[in-house]
Length: 279
Image (cartoon, rainbow, N blue to C red):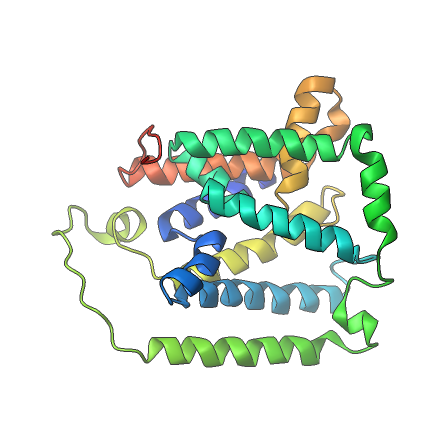
């Protein structure tokens, strides 16, 4: 139990720290593509996915990880994804983003996190079993492109890497805009960690590595998955209501660690402030 608590909290704290300092936002990545015509954050997302893809499939092929994707409930995924997409725009952040912004002191994220926790728990309760069974009825046999077409994963991963490298190199070749900055108050590692603006691509590489680290740490405790936010968030409320330790797993300490890591980063960089969103 102690190792599960420690590894989950450390991995989550690293993720929360990096996301807070790098201002990494899934919602912003998609939003900026349409509103600001800026693809940089979306490209950063591709980097994080690429890093994790190479690492995870390499570990699976080496026999160090075991993972079965299962079936693909396409109807539930489409409906749920659409509702979630609306929600993250209104809330100003995705699931992980809401956790780390809550650690910054944003009251709106506290409210979003609470409702997210409640609805996640409701959808996992017997009250929603009929709806879940109906949606799961519309599924394909495989939840993997490689398994669907009986292919090796590596050609697909290679395509992802080539596309990612191409768009990243194209982005890096663009002229850099000079932004006025205040004189630094700190020097050395403190300046880099808590004051200097992090490049989204560097942040993405770090997030990809942390996501990769999450797999063996999680599987060591019997939880066969990597980063996961929704189920652990629901588990917190289910544990508080039912008092059943079966809801406590590595993922619970992961999300709690995200909050802690973000809080540490925000306090150290003087960005923590309890505040409401602008009207």
